[in-house]
Length: 494
Image 1 (cartoon, rainbow, N blue to C red):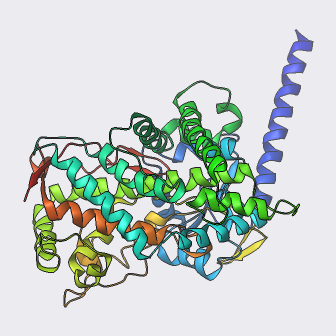
Image 2: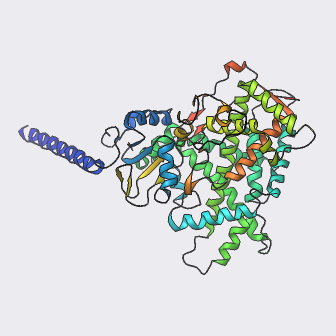
Image 3: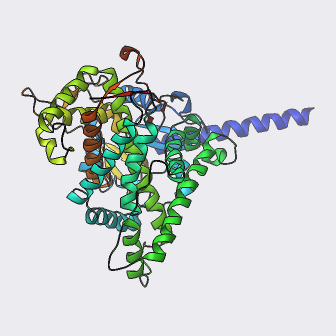
């Protein structure tokens, strides 16, 4: 008994010593870091973070500790930036040192740092430069791409017309329209609305976006070493990505069999040609793995960001019918009913332009942004951020910054209109992020949003099957991303 008591006492002393050493190490490590809530051993600050409203809980911590603070996701240290000024200072004023891609364990186990979105260093530089140039070559911001989007918008109009004013869920037709545009750029082909295989791809994209925003996915971000061995919905992410990966791999093989180096048809062709050109270069990042994963990134990100924004937009217009009416008045005045909308109309439609911007601001699709990392030891606002520190630049906090937006939690197009009713730029509008890592497809996304949005409202008045006052704008899921609510609408021909 005495021996057992001595052993127990010794064990307790060892545990106390370890806790003391851990706390001392934490204090040393954080002495020059931004302030933040005290983390618990292993758990970090998980108890201070909401399982259903991660973004809001981080904003609340920012109100207590300031616009730059530190949190621990499990044992993972993250510096969080809140508000437009802090985000701008990091991503624009110090864009080079904040230009690393931070960890995202839910997707790192799939992409392993390959592909244009999650790459770092020389790999990222090569892939981003190539992707920007290739997208430009295939018409980003040019007439040829506008014609593709216009055709797809008209296909969407005809698909909606088939509902004959009956309630329907717009998720799939909107997703199909945007995915078809990305498909034409990436794979050189659009798919019919009745194509079951393509419908399966769209389902996988929407499911993946949802799963990445759930609490189990948040737990995986905090405790990947444990969660990777546990069953649960977080593992459906692997299944959804595999569907996209297999689809892209099949398209790559098809392109390889029919490739004409003198006449590239799409992004994949251009990448295959680049691979051949650099096959003797041992430092080249142009190989099949980066090709497949870059195409997955472009297709998934480009499809879901725009389609989510449109779904939110149409829901908002059903709730705020007077705003929908003003948009339609401007469409009738500038475009009329006998021709399709064109991007050149945008400059003559300040109210519609403002409404689209306000939809993007209010929907706040990526409130946390995609994690960044500092590429070297960095002095920032009086604090020291060690090399490799993950940084969450809360884009949503800039989009809701009360110093730049009136009533930031309300839907109000006046945020982008001056006293004369002209469109007004707002520097805190960072829906596409900022700096060196800003969205590759910003020009494409802006064109899609305007042409699809105006095409639908040119032909239909959108009405809700329920009382507009009862429409709930709460996201279906709110984790690292906001997922738009599922709903039904009635499209009445005008």
